[in-house]
Image (cartoon, rainbow, N blue to C red; front, side):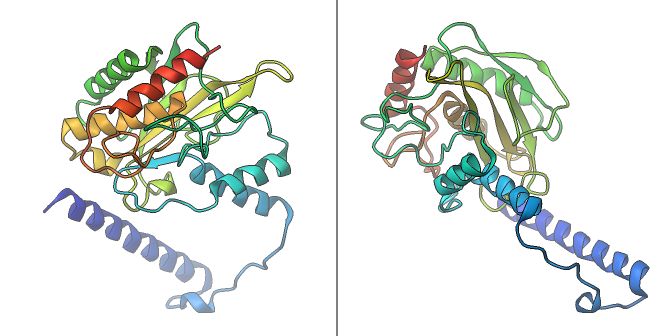
Length: 288
């Protein structure tokens, strides 16, 4: 059985188990054999906090980049980002929309996930110091420490930035992150719904302004990888996915140029292309 078939099988099992739990709950509450349609339904309310929470969840999953075998991503992520900013006042902190990059940004073979108000300069990390990273090993495949170490070395060499693994953590706040270490971990679609279907990884940075009117800089971020998929991937492919997501954390968006690792769909590329490398150099030159 291939890893794709095994992954689909496990998800079918989980869905059947969920349905059985739902039926058991109905039996306990309304009597044995109660059909789902006969169960009382809570009244629907419009507006209010529940609508905002739904918006937050949709935004958080839609505004983080996805990679590998993902021909379609959540639509209108940028409009959701704008709505979140307007509705909550979080204008100084939001996950970068790394799905396709800012239209017209970057250069040949690369785009930027987010640009400064000038629409040209990229948002990235400060020049000085390291980018601390914590790893949550829950659900990680065997040999995950070597995988993380290898990819960190490769992205550091290529970018001029310095990710530094500072330890392990039990933190699983992949979405609603603020300033602090970049979190790298593994999860399934039950925990992070955006990992459902063919999506192999998500990554993004949290941005803030150091001063009123000053440039935005990255102050935190995360990478979450599909725990079901990573257990059966060849090492070069697994490393390519992690490097792709870490490049999003640094500030690169997706590109349609062939031969680049930052394409939104994996076509077998395992090495950074010339456009990827040029984009990483541009980020380093633009840091403040």
